[in-house]
Image (cartoon, rainbow, N blue to C red; front, side, top):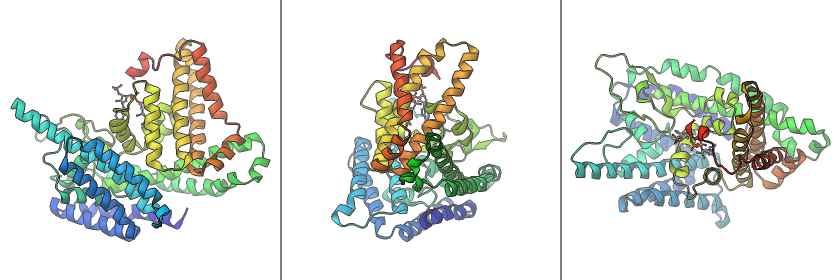
Length: 456
Ligand SMILES: CC(C)(COP(=O)(O)OP(=O)(O)OC[C@H]1O[C@@H](n2cnc3c(N)ncnc32)[C@H](O)[C@@H]1OP(=O)(O)O)[C@@H](O)C(=O)NCCC(=O)NCCS
């Protein structure tokens, strides 16, 4: 791990105790202190690069002020175009942004786009209320248009700054306005997140040490037999997964101690989104709470779910909600596979300009098409035992798809990536294309998705 990455991990260990202190503060004090702390961290870690985030925030605020109706697509255009400038600033002599400015900029991009949508929904609902003389339900809806100070506070409050978890503006406001934060049951959920973090960290460091990714770039690597080369990616990806489990569980624990994203279970919160139903418990009733809103990873299901499609839902869950809500839903295509491909392309661009992101994300779309094809043509025709076998093979291939893609994410550079993928004969691509072709031959590939798939 680089010193920057270690510092990044160090932040989480500070966030956890600091969060507890925030539960003692009044809403105004919480807002001011969280902002001050966030600004301190931003300026301390990003220096002059803080200006990038400031431009992004002010630009979005201006768009919302000038035209709230068109602010969502405009803010999407603004923040995503700004990412090009942010990443290519070195071409005009700007200093290259390092890890911290990059993380802040990426999360801010998601936050600003979502904010523009939230403000537009607020105005639409207001208009509906005026025309129908009735009040619409308040699920996930703002109570007033945020001021510039509100937007700056949301952009820089310390918890949502660089923990990798996307948090909506409404979730942030609900956090500020909690009536009795000290009564929230934070200890048990926090401990459940921290239970295995040291195990994840030890596994990540140990496996990373034994199987360094840099070795893949050497010519020596090609001297080994196929199985060594193939299973090397299994080890590398395992270390990466452990690193993310560690980081995201640590980040979730930091939110939990602060009480951020805590809602009654009855509100049926979803990661990233927050409550999905109106819930008001009877006075005096025992209320159970959860932190689903800030859940960013589901380790068990990431490891053991069967399909690539499902696996995507359990990984970086808050961002996946953002992509589903704002990109996939308004994709300029009707066919499922094209919509998935489009979403993956946007996701790759958001991650960076390196070829590795694009090749990996587009590979997932191909793998999803392959699994849909095999499910409708093969699995649907098997008996119970056959389906069980099919699912085991499917699970094994899902894990290898992770590994294969993960190499792209780590190697990033096209030549390194192709060097590795060619060393294992582009095996996952070959399997995926064979499955798609077989599906077509068996007459199932034409349909985009089976009815069963749609209903699941
Ligand atoms: C493109 C993408 C959204 C498609 O997902 P999918 O689950 O195959 O999409 P579907 O349309 O089949 O969704 C199935 C159901 O789950 C729902 N759903 C999907 N994601 C959801 C989410 N995050 N929250 C709530 N509901 C969700 C859909 O609304 C749909 O429900 P419906 O059938 O009642 O309409 C998904 O592949 C994706 O997010 N890709 C990008 C992944 C990525 O880049 N992640 C970040 C990596 S670091």
